[in-house]
Image (cartoon, rainbow, N blue to C red; front, side, top):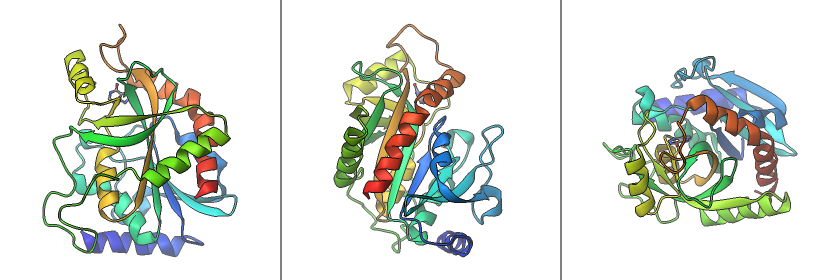
Length: 270
Ligand code: HPA
């Protein structure tokens, strides 16, 4: 596995003009950020060793290198989800490759359901912590010592300093941003109202089907991890609504400009 990660990083390195400082995983409906990049170089996932095609219709996934001002960044446009049948190694492969590329910061973004009733669809939320309810963990199996320790501490997984950078970027852009705990689930079903009541009781503010495995593996290998959720809907049972993926994507698209302005500012501050 480690060899494949290194080969993949070596290949990407050979294609890029310089080392990206930050990688940004773009969540559902948040892909427009890539339009803010200058000096773009895009590589389809299918051309990169160890990256499989992502199965979302019409998107094979691509890695996009570019610059925000003078800062080189890389966008991971398209991610692997466990509900698609990808194993944990595949889901966290891009994050680990980022480490070997020399990237320092990984910003994970996603669409999420709002559990906290102070949230509204369209809100942006800094993830301060997570609860792993996926039933899986990407670090199960032999520990890759070269990446990190067998039993990693998770108390600062969503790095506090990085969260402060995100918050101050938001306030400089006059973008309201909230803070919350993300509970990660396997999916692909949306949750039942009873599950959402349980998640609320155990301290979750947001729910989604991504981010948790990548955050674990990235933190394990020493990347500085941050997370931003876009609340696309209120979670099951909170309002009398039926949840649909098209509505989730539609809502994320509505905030994609604000989101992009925020991420641009974050990049300029790292
Ligand atoms: N539940 C799980 N994942 C999600 C949701 C949700 O309500 N909204 C967007 N992704």
